[in-house]
Length: 139
Image 1: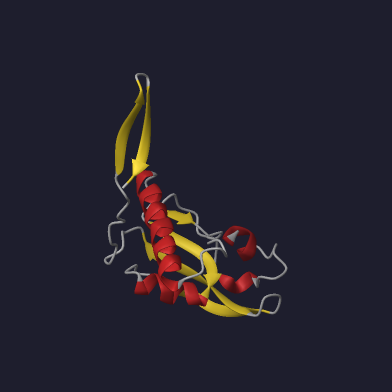
Image 2: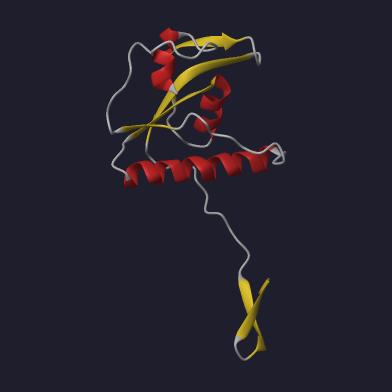
């Protein structure tokens, strides 16, 4: 998407959103980050965002990348910083009249959050129900 934006192919995004196209296997774009509207509480949305971004960091590093970039609402930068990621804005923001938001290109190193908390999942208790089957019950 950033490549198309830089080349002026996207009507709602100014072609000056980046000075030039970035061509390197070290930079991975993750522009289409979405959280369901059904995740409504601030705590749940923060945990969801942290899990998504941590997964993106892991995939990027596994693939040989070292940086993530996205064309995102400016508010994402603040949310990422609050979660312990080192997100920065690249270039000038722009206003999208279609949705009323300010967007910019964001960049961050593919480094796990400094504030990432381990997610505690309920443990499963195995209950035998048949010789060849088992039922798992969450505690």
